[in-house]
Length: 68
Image (cartoon, rainbow, N blue to C red; front, side, top):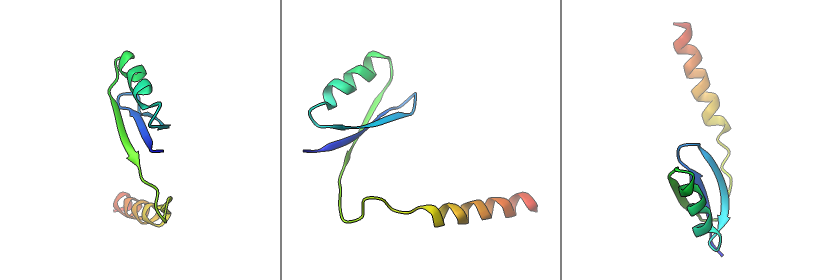
């Protein structure tokens, strides 16, 4: 069974839905006047990647820019 990350574009809300619910959920979003964006979720060996080190570097760079 495939899973999709379904995002209501204008509101920024998202949820995981399976392929059997996708069409119904997309129509619900469209009925509210929003655009639906669906991305298939493909699971592999590494499901969650730890982005913490990246954000620490980014925040340090922002602090340096502010302190100049």
